[in-house]
Length: 318
Image (tube, rainbow, N blue to C red):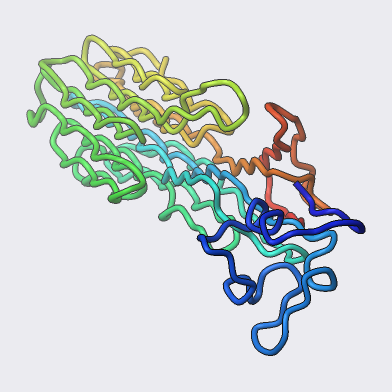
């Protein structure tokens, strides 16, 4: 809450707005409000009308693409989720403009190649690590990233980044076999499942956040493709892995940073691309309204807080 522009102003009022310890001393508020870093501090002149800007944030990178499938019993792993970073009560500097980058979801992977990874998202100095790892296919291991991609039927899973996501699951480890299946991509809330015999591994669950006022899962892993049965994506928008020689894998949900589903086209005599990862998102919930934004964020309010959801790159100033 902004301090008054006139009238009585006490040290306890400043402590309520800016925090601090008892006994209260003006010297602990140097650099806060309009107070100088050195020299005298004046109660009214330096603190009338000032606001301590505090935000909660959620920064999610773009999801990785699912691995491609093809003839000779080749199945792709699910794409890993984009890096997931969340924090509460972070103090910002009033009047400073903070740049925002929203990472794109990666395209689906091709037969026998590592699928692409998603793009990282950024809020000021907060950056998700390189987006989600792409799902691996037959001879190329899955990529590591915010969460790692699932391994193809004979390729290894990718690793997640500590504090941002989890590892993908391994493929079944059998080549030119009707047991072929890819592992699930890792999600922000759980690892991707390893593949079973001819059954893809499920994608890891996403992270749960109520930053917008409703509890929502985001940044889930994509499911792996399977010779007989493709796996479900993780809760929170992970793409479905395809089954048998069907081309029915699906993309990670947009604006969630979830991974795409892995492909399986084992007997069709051709090749199939994996599905794309979902684009990332940056969400900021603040105790005051922004003075300016760019990039057309979706604006809502909840519980007395001002919420800005960026689905494309831009900036915000308080």
